[in-house]
Length: 135
Image 1 (cartoon, rainbow, N blue to C red):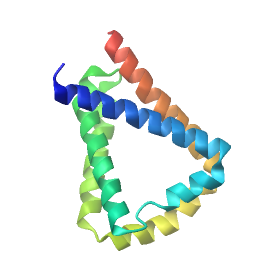
Image 2: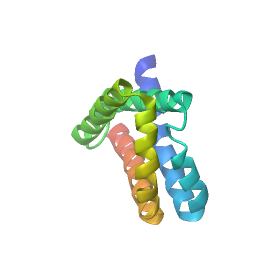
Image 3: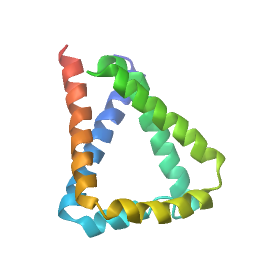
Image 4: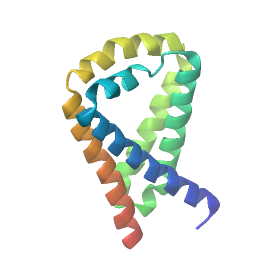
């Protein structure tokens, strides 16, 4: 396994763990999870950090997807992350901030559902990695 492949694997696993943590926080500490989600795009440095992390996660998914179960779905998800990141990079961060200020409260009304979906997605990513490595 090359260093790039190992890095992609590590990032994909970390993304799965992040979603599990977000899911747990959404279910057991919903106020904290809501505050965390509202923090996205709150400033230019946070906006660009989010874009960098989205880019790294998307690229890692595209690179590692062939070695995962459901490789086509994870490859597509990685490309969706990359394309939406490129779109966000082209707009002023303040537009992203205004959008987040309107959209996040709509989603956090259903924080428990968001938590369950995050847990499912995190578990699916980790299971796809494990099943891909076992094959």
